[in-house]
Length: 295
Image (cartoon, rainbow, N blue to C red; front, side, top):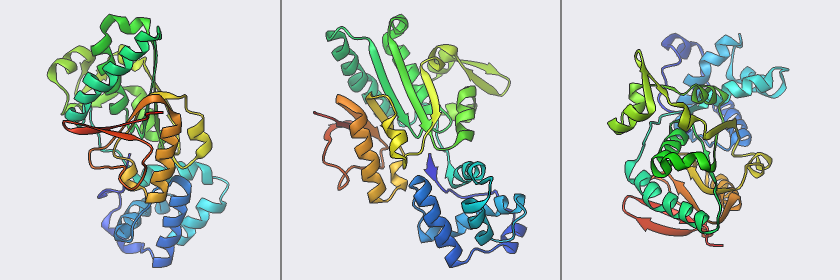
């Protein structure tokens, strides 16, 4: 999940018809922040204008102020809130994104976690993918687990909890069908082993799909976060960069509480916990930092 990107949703005619005032922008910006924690800076005002123009037209409204009131008071506001989340987030991702980090995950984090569980005669592994978008990240994790455990995967109790704000991307993730572009960073042997080509698309094999459980979550909702099963590893990549510092602290604290002792947090390569949290111990590896919960 990531914040507003350049949009082609609104036509030039729509942009001419609808202009967002400073007050309307502030109202919608603050409303979005309260609802999901995404903070939209003043420099992205035009993106809010472009993205929401289509929703306003489809609802037969005449202004951004009317749309703001619709979100607050209309009987269909909950359904429209889901549409709003789809509009203000974009989902640029791929399988095997950031290979150096995934190599550390496979060779260090996952391997050490599994070895630690074996020593305690345990075969229950829990991983949380927070901000999973259309499923490429959790499915990549599932494939890596299969590559490491091979047939032994069948004897383990493994669950990857994959959450996102948008129901639309979750529906796409559950289908498990992807374009060649989504596989652009995936090793060829992995594609041959775990995907079946169907026309121009690629369908994911059932084995990694079985490990992943998808569900909607709002990272700004403490009760939803508290209900996530405790994890050995948390992935939250390219998500917190779009939050302000207060929201970052709340989300990172929730991840800390969720993680089991000795658990690991992996965030995006452009993200950092510097000045956000000192609860984790940063472990530096080639190509990435792993944040460990030491207590």
